[in-house]
Length: 297
Ligand code: NAD
Image (cartoon, rainbow, N blue to C red; front, side):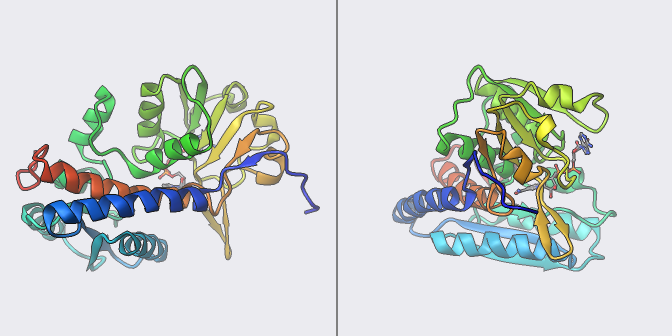
């Protein structure tokens, strides 16, 4: 492909994530002074999915860089639902542990909704438990999902106002599209949530001031889907051979969008940074007695 003439502001997730992590490092140090120990996170990984191994590695590395104590529980692909739930209950009861995260996807015999519901909401740094999803729906979140939080932080650092804007999200999953629609709604956007059964997708996407794409379809959003001057955030991560591609055809959309996030180096690093931010937040909330992490409230 020839040289593309870039006209968009590039929303540099790596740089923005570094800023988040600097702030988290300060919060970790404050917590350490108050609690006499650093905040702590345990990541549970089941099986040997190579992408999961990479994502968990990045989360552990970012935690280490901020002073958060992170450990991994690696379970076999064939672990039973009972054994996994027993482990989660023992992590819930450990008073020295602030955050628990189960890396997705899980093998098909382990239903995500059953597994996540087992995590204490006070330690639920992914924000996937029914209690935390409910609070998010009501507009009073304590711990919200990390990728949607990363998108919101990217908009904030990019100087992009949300209030009164029309935000269109492609993808309605419980980990990205749906919680993001709630966060943006509570920031006073008018939100349209599209999915695989939405007819005339481009009619909706072309109306967006802010377009967020999380469908897992490489390059599906082309220039004709985008309004001139729109902000476009690409959440998609698609491995094609040895390349990572987003859901947005970057070169052609960059001619039209006023701001655009790249893949890699966009929402991915923001998600990792938000895991660290949520861990220190969970630790602080437990220390101030806002939540009792041992009771699974
Ligand atoms: P998912 O498969 O659970 O959901 C995909 C959603 O996209 C569904 O709601 C589906 O209806 C919709 N969709 C699929 N094809 C569509 C189409 N042609 N038109 C309109 N809607 C369509 O996926 P997910 O877990 O939400 O992840 C979505 C993408 O985001 C994936 O590429 C994933 O790897 C990536 N992701 C990235 C991060 C990150 O940190 N950057 C985090 C989570 C997921």
